[in-house]
Length: 431
Image (cartoon, rainbow, N blue to C red; front, side):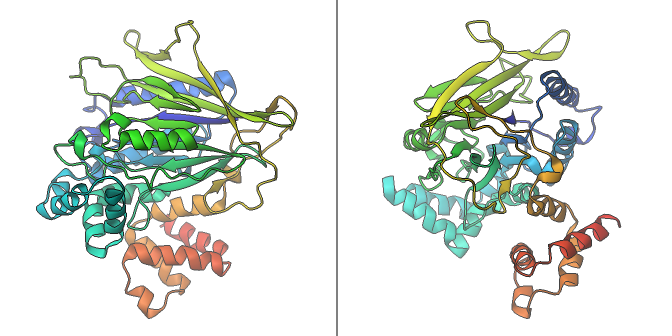
């Protein structure tokens, strides 16, 4: 089984978030930490990942992301997973709106939005890869990308999405697909202009894989929302969204959509109801078929005494249960790539369920933990690590910092220098 902690719309806001005594939401976030610890202990089931569907910050300030990273580390540690098991996508509050409102950025967006249908999808994809237009579209994401990079969730001109996998057992995996709905967000956030593009929703379907798609804006906020909904209904079993601050579940054939409550909604909202989700996924199969079983625990804030409690179904049940047939796996996973989180497993291929232990920090693929530690260093410390490896030629040294670091990861793996790389990181961490 895989257990996921789903958060959304945390809204770390300067200057208050830097001072817990002034931040009225700090006590609420502590209640979430306490509740997840209790939930883990009472169920005797470990968590495997934290998924955040956007609006981590409020004004996309580096200071807001810094506090957010600190709290997410605290939460991850409290529930027994490493910070590298946090996965994020951007919300409209995670982009620099002043930058998004610049005439040059707006002009590039208008060129794309002037097209329709397949022409718009093609123009958007081409614009992202154009050196000037792509850089312009990504400029509002600068602070967010600096934050998300350590989690392996940044976006760039080559890919406006990310993918990571978690193994249920030797034959089944959960693929996390982080999609971006905020390329066309600005201070107005007009629904008619928000556009994802069909490329992002083009998920790979293969045997033994459960697809989970996570993004910020729900379908009704996207200009191409109906088309995206149709694509994901055919390829994803689980969809997570945020933005509307309404804790709801919707079924769409073989897909269940979790619309998140805000972790920290504004107290000015008419229906102030903080909440979050715990989602358990498990696989069962017989000789011919396989199913993914989903059991969700919707946690909502009780006013007095303040605590998180279960949001119940119409049948007065404390959990929400669904199951969908998936393609049965035939073979073992043959190779674990850099994006795959591997779990200790003890599985049974009977006609009931496939059992697997929850994730263990020591068993996560080293590349993901190493990447998190590397990006958690200061810029000067990263330069020290790179220079001591002595792997880059003169031309590569002239590239941007991010491009240099991407090259370093490739060369470290290619030359079998993972151990030396980790040692250099440890030296800088100890300074």
